[in-house]
Image 1 (tube, one colour):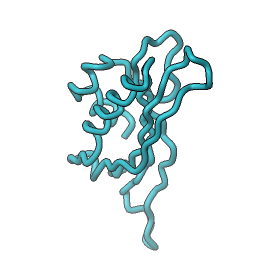
Image 2: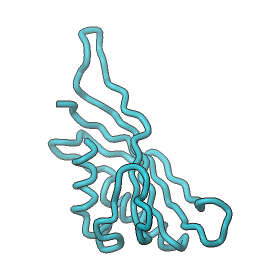
Image 3: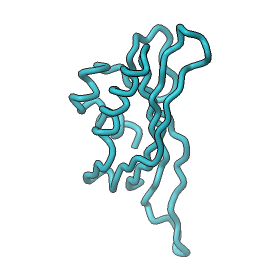
Length: 126
């Protein structure tokens, strides 16, 4: 799922026009220029019936759009949501936006802004 979700964002011209290939899982690499995107796996519970695992997963993924101004972060966050919200194909049953928030990394004026969106990513565990 992680590789496929990353590939989906990298295939989005709306996202890559703003960040190029600066999209990473986990921590943003030291020295990474702004703006950029960071993805975080929040939870990934399996689905089970009394017969065992169904193979369908519903992961919660947080996608953070980072930029030096709140306006840039919001525009990038909107591009991410446009690329992911409602998406479905043979790899993803659906990608659904469930939450959004904006904030700043700390209280210092030189810190970047973040537009953060949570998605539920339904996918088949093969």
